[in-house]
Length: 91
Image 1 (cartoon, rainbow, N blue to C red):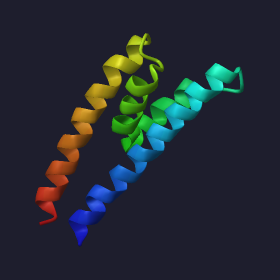
Image 2 (cartoon, helix red, strand yellow):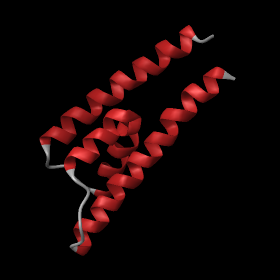
Image 3 (spheres, rainbow, N blue to C red):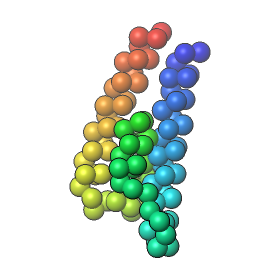
Image 4 (spheres, one colour):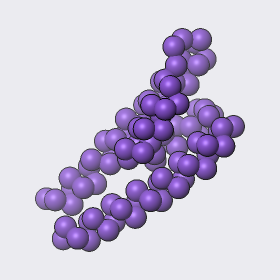
C-alpha cells in the first residue's frame, strides 16, 4: 500500500506540472497573464518536473530557455532516484 502512494504523489504532481506549463503556453499564445517562471520552477522542484518537461517538449514552450532545458532533466533524474530509494526503504 505504501509504495502505491509513493508513486501516486509524484505522478499527480507531474500531471499538475504538465497542466501548468500547458496553461502558460496557452496564455502566451493568447497574450494573457502568464505563470511566473518562479512558480514554474517551484512546481518542477515539487515533483512536477517530468510532466512539465513533457509539456514543454510537446507544446514547444520554454525550449529556448537554457535554465529550463538544463534544470528539468536534472530534477527528473534526482526525483527518480529519490523515489526509487524511498520505495526500497518502504518495502
